[in-house]
Length: 406
Ligand code: NAP
Image (cartoon, rainbow, N blue to C red; front, side, top):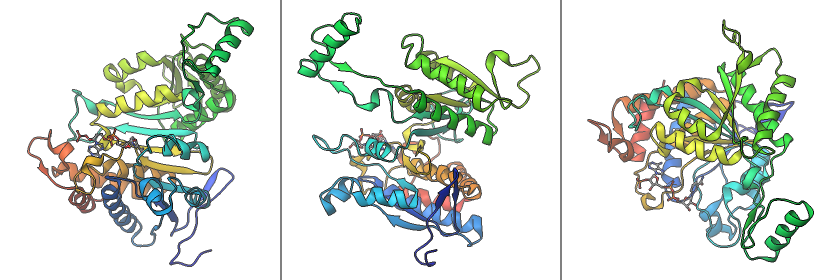
């Protein structure tokens, strides 16, 4: 055990975390506006932990370098020490990072997900009263999206048009595999989706629905067109539900007239239809499990329905490792102006506390955000569309949240 000043690492064994009262949690402050929102978020987190635990628990924050700050200090965008810290301390939180342009690492976020095998991207989307929304009844949407995070077109297997590789691959497909004709000047991308990768994602979504008593899990796919990838995602999902969750889940078509009897209903929808369902019948959906690209589109579209990216949290979770993150970018034009909305990162912290089993802290922060919104003292993005609102800066908004902690 480390001494009290240094904190104690979280450990993981047998699929469970052991969380001490003084966990060390590494953080990446983020570039651009990351600096402002991290400062504000940390203040809210520390106050909520102290309040919910009566001073018995605290977090020992440990800074990790990544992005521009890391590059300026070490010449490396993603130092090995940062990966080592997440491996040691297991659960971390990060602000947005500038993606280096030209050469080198494609995206620091994608690199982190791949290196740590953070295979589930989880994005809860719910409405907070008072936040401006384009919907008539934004409160009807309350979904948690589980997006597969390592496969699909994000695997990065692509060949540019006109290259020798694209030419060879085209010939191999048409001649050896007797595929349909591919135009000579085509670029070619490959979409790998495995049974293992799909089922570990669906397993997490089903377990989450059971743990949180959510009524359904919907497998969102494009299997009508891409039968062996997206169609297989659906089939593997149902197979897993039957094999590992028998008695606790029920397929939609087998639900008796009297209702599901507390079991989680497993259903599937074609991706395009899901977008219109989210707009027209959001109440029918609770947990969505989806391959990578569908999930990317769907989570931003759903976030827009409840007030946009400033309120959208996210988590990247693997087995025994998790990184929680604001879903928006660095919004560089507002950097260091104490202006933007810190809620995306604060709500990512709420997810982190829930993940660690500190639900009391999570509830306290949610009450704080609801209170701050109710007081109508909010950042510019909300104030510009909220009647009777007073615009305040990032830090003053965080003070409002602290003042309303539950
Ligand atoms: P962005 O940083 O998300 O900002 C786009 C716009 O979204 C902002 O100008 C602002 O709109 C609004 N916005 C974003 N966050 C907000 C917040 N917290 N509160 C209020 N409004 C917010 O997107 P970008 O300009 O395309 O990307 C900038 C950099 O971020 C790039 O280097 C990109 O690669 C990187 N990026 C990083 C991540 C990540 O680390 N996870 C994700 C995406 C992008 P208004 O102008 O209307 O005020």
